[in-house]
View (tube, one colour):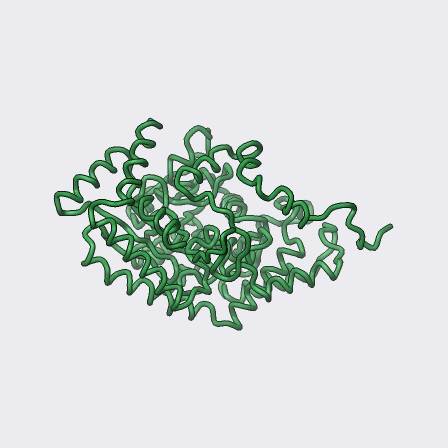
Length: 466
């Protein structure tokens, strides 16, 4: 028996000091071989050493502004002191966790807090990720309705496990992984198509992102409410995927709350609930759905997750919600998001390559489009002929290399940059981003220089990969 004070010869800091410099070689040798290759190609092969809030620092001491938040995971930024303390506390408590045959308090307390923000919902299932939250919703909808089919939207992203992939609206993620579940895509906002699918009587539910992550496209005004009414009239369920949009990202706790009267039957959250530390996903739903799935003691474990509701994840989630309430995160996001989007929209008339600024809160899409002047148009056409999306990548690279701001394109073959920074960014961060973005746009409209030279490199690589 041990009191846990020994190290067993393992020293993490010493290991990192000894082997940390091999990070890219280790990935190339043992993990996804294309990741280091891609990072080297676009000049993103940095060595980051520490982070705090919305900033991180590289090995040379450069301060980088994070406008990506780990694809939305770092909602409160990196290493929030309240979340860190909660995790230290839960580890120091040495709880009898994951016994599987007890009812520990932390899952119940976190469910209670989540449901307080979701007054029309009654119960929560905790898993380990966003895709698992979606998988849970798909299973629950099918079982509760007794129907097999799910309707989803073109260009949607709901995850990459097989069930979630079946409702992923982007062929690039689906190709080669079939056969998938026989689900059906419609265009975001197309009520006629939804009603047409519902007439067959075999639809269990409609899963939708209130704002699509790919391209940052918002559901049209009134669409969610009308879709909900159609679904309920035909005995089907509305499933809101709030994995990226939830927990304050769009200036309300959930993005569906921007439209009055929308009360989804199932809601999926994850990402920011983790505090950036412990993977967690949650599927919230109505009582009758949960009671159908867990209809008897024989079915008590019919849907479960080995690491679901573990103490560390629950502690992180509780700390995140506590911080959001104490710091007024949702109101802050609304104010800072309006400031950032407003300043970016003022640039649209100034730059012919800048087409549109869209989104809500701190989920903002910057779309580029075909310029009108002959010189810029010829360069734009060259990029488009090689591969759509290269201009957006041309903007992302100098933002990082020259201005130390991390962003990324919103999806493959899209001329859109998506801004999803930590929800704690402030006015100074907004000024820094807009100043840097303006400088990059000035360079792009200058018609020459390093930016277009890099564009030629991207064109050569795109053509070589065909």
